[in-house]
Length: 129
Image (cartoon, rainbow, N blue to C red; front, top):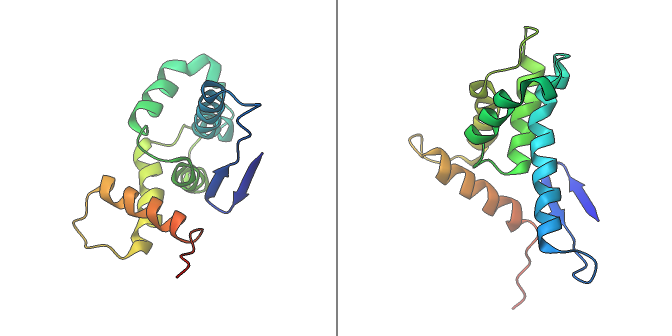
C-alpha cells in the first residue's frame, strides 16, 4: 500500500507478499516516471528520447522522491517553452523547498537534502518518556 501526505511518502510492506527486489524496482519506476513527467508536460515522447531521460536520472540520482516531485512540479509550472525543462530548473524548485529549512547560506546541497529527510521523518516520530 502506498500512502501520500503532500511530499512525504511512506511505503508500507507486507514481507510475506513483497520481495525486496520488487519493492526496489517499483520505487525506481515511480521515481523515473516522475522525471518522465517533464516529457509529458511538453507533449514529447519519452520513449524516443531515452538517452536524455538517462542523463536527467543520473544528474538527479541523489534527490529523494518527495523533493524530486517538488522540483519537477516547479519546472513544469515555470517552463515557458515547448522544450523539456533543464535540470537546473528542477534544482531551482528543490532549492526553493530546502530554503524553508533555514540552514546557513553556504550549506551544500547534500547536507540540505539530508536535513530535509530528517525533518520529514521527525514529524512521524514520537518519543515516550
